[in-house]
Length: 230
Image (cartoon, rainbow, N blue to C red; front, top):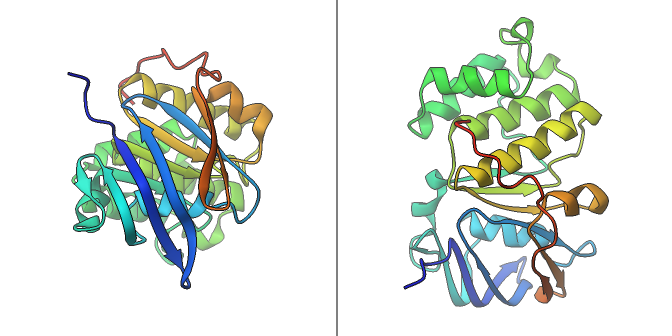
């Protein structure tokens, strides 16, 4: 029998300010897949990611993530997923190390996991004791990514993951995504940088009007076979 999908949505509806930003989404995503979600602004991409993270209620249809029923117990999935959105979710007055330590501890990760994640994201040690408010946009983005990587989530939910990063940082993100998938994690990400994103993705799902318009398999993901102990 085939394993249950990591993400399973059937007719899933989610409201944003009483508007059905997801208007009946059907989608299955399996373990180890890297799925690019594309679509115009307002198509429902961010809402899909936030719903899968258990942050928006499902008001109709079936929706499970990692076996958790999002309509019943959405909070139960939050420690098992990592969401990187437009906001960094960092505390500006805390140092880089303090932020990573806080989020690692909240998810059961160790301080060593946090330090390793900062190194993996190329955050130099000279920045570790600086308050986040003093960092550049790109540096904050790397630290935010490190807080997620330290937790080793089973499902990565990335909203414009390349935003605010230089070319080196963007390449680093692509490598992390490939490594995560190679280690068995699932990645669902939205991006407008289609040339880059399509090279990483195994599938491309297009949203329009809050529903899946198309689902293209075997899109790319040439590096997805990499395995790592990230």
